[in-house]
Each structure stands twice: as C-alpha cells, then as structure tokens.
Image 1: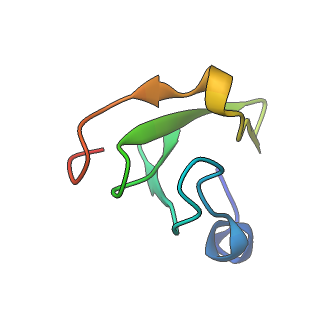
Image 2: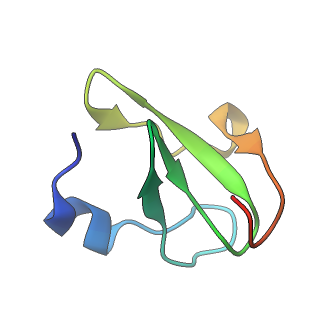
Image 3: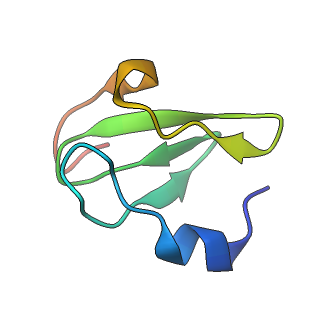
Length: 57
C-alpha cells in the first residue's frame, strides 16, 4: 500500500517523531495519532488524525 521508502521519511506532524504503517493508517507511537490513507496517499494533517493512546497507536 505505502512504499517503505516513503514511510521511512514520514514523521508525525504533531510531535515530529517517526511513524509506521498500522493496517490502513499511518500511526505514531509517541502521541497516539493515526492518520488516514486515501487512494494510496497518506493524509498527514493533524485535523484529519484519529487520537489514540500513546504507545498503543
């Protein structure tokens, strides 16, 4: 779905830490936000993120 090279350079826009792919979302373990992927494109906007539990994104 998302190219690993792209994933390697992405960072959470809220806390600036690395993110990882989690099912159909880009997840941040630090702040817990989960960003949607629409039509194969990660939507890395804080307003579009779902808030999760830090460390359990």
